[in-house]
Length: 150
Figure 1 (cartoon, rainbow, N blue to C red):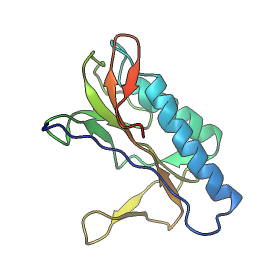
Figure 2: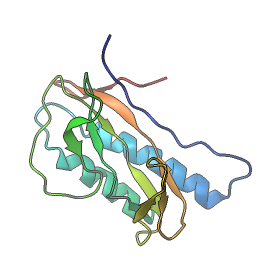
Figure 3: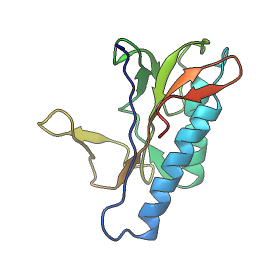
């Protein structure tokens, strides 16, 4: 009906070591903690704080180059959602829809990314592993409804 949604999930391929499994688990937890911070009247920067605190507690870095975004009839729109600590202004409003999509990397020094020529694929500059999870949410008076739950 003319509306967009956006979601992503990191999957395992083949045998995966425990450190990589932990990275993926903590990345999903970060996304869910960011979502749990959301409701009408809350500052957007609370999302980044919640994600950063949890990632750092587990020794992971948060990629700053990619952000969440508004979703509706226009795919990438306002608001811009930062997943790291920030001082950006703005508050959530009931009825807004946007994504929360943190990307975590192994270690805090590996958060820089390079884009491939295809204009879509991004890799960490130092070659370290990364994981991403994303949901589109709807802000309500009392919280956030996940619109892209399967």
